[in-house]
Image (cartoon, rainbow, N blue to C red; front, top):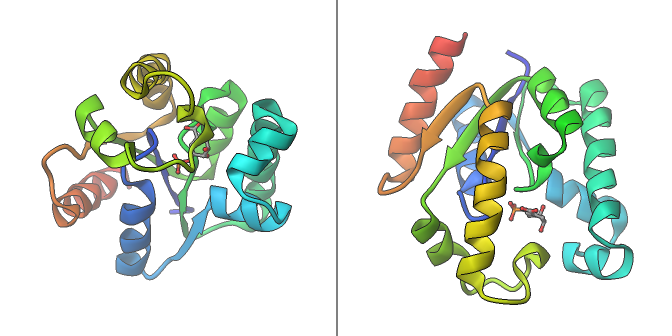
Length: 171
Ligand code: S3P
């Protein structure tokens, strides 16, 4: 196994689950948002405000390309918009086993409602924005993923257990 890659909507639990999965498997944990922030020396809302979304998306693609060369045996958590580009979906699948953490709109809203650090959710009605983005992305997440794990109403421990079972089957 090369890597485990966690994808899913903002607030789906990618970072929390990813860190625990890495600990459990004795693997390194990598977060693409964190890498971009540290390489750019500025926070995501600042990158969006100063250079725009397209620039951030290019940074994501460029990072995934580098990860083909320098990242193996890691648990990788990626930003919620990473699988939107077709090229990224292909890059993600070539990095290893892609796990889609899905959650209902209500669960997502509960988790993101008090967080102002996500520029994709700024402006307008939060529920409408989440609903619209989820609708646009759902099929793309499924296209990118090898494994689909629902997180609604499940403890992190249970989610990890399911990931364990499913990834064993994946090989
Ligand atoms: C984004 C999700 C964020 C971050 C950026 C854009 C998105 O990551 O990459 O704000 O388009 O869904 P999280 O999914 O970790 O919040």
